[in-house]
Image 1 (cartoon, rainbow, N blue to C red):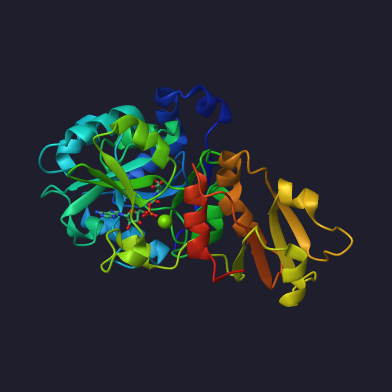
Image 2 (cartoon, helix red, strand yellow):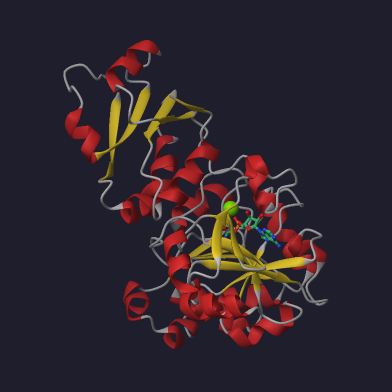
Length: 355
Ligand code: TXA
Ligand code: MG
């Protein structure tokens, strides 16, 4: 058991993006010391909070799996703060197309799969010969990684299976007592995890849709390459081992609501038009419902014209649902375009039913 400490980084420093000043704060000094001693530390990234440890130390990385209760066959992403750190963790040349994507989207929410170097221990990659790498853009993450000058293995800092944490409080709720330190850097801006890609010949396979959209990738790679979204149902052996586990789910059963159906009819049909149900709806649908008829609790997820906002708040909404005694949460589907693709990917994994 740890006495979990939470240390906040000044909002002003984050807004200023002062990596050098952030690196000198006591929070980062302490975090770096812990990491150098093979301990784990939770820290903010622009996507979600990560639970970091020295990616090159087996003993340190094992503590991540232990704290999260993560299956050991689910590999971790190595986070770097400088491209110069790549040769330590990967083997072989970086393909031209990967270089293009890195130049455009790093630092940022894009994770690329490479062949791993011999220095990268098996625990980090869960026995795979490949390693996932990304350079986050959050100044606190960059300050911390450059201070320790080591690649940090970091999955999302939630208990395995639960919604990812987008605030320090979410990390605390899941991991209090299990980790020594949470560096609080406020609310994560993107709110869904990075896009994980693998390059195979002239194809960019999206193994997990995320903060960098399919459209953004297509624009950079040009016409001689294609982008494919891996569908876990079609792949016998999951390419990204994380695809096979239940993920992102609140404790309360979650259903997805298809928006071509009549909401009032469905509430009657399933006998769920009552206070034990929470409906999470877009502002557009909210404007259309019959307020005299609907007896459920309702939350507004925002307008579908701003999918970035919906993505940013998604995991917080799912976590809030667990804080009341609802028996059921219904969430409206969003357009499967742009970052909506990542939102729907998470919802489909979290939900037990679609109506
Ligand atoms: O935005 C993010 O990516 C966050 C922040 C903290 O950086 N991290 C994150 O890590 O979401 P995690 O562990 O929750 O998800 C990593 C995903 C998993 O689906 C895992 O299976 C996949 O990346 N992955 C990791 N290494 C891989 C590899 N070598 N080959 C294929 N997939 C891999
Ligand atoms: Mg995760």
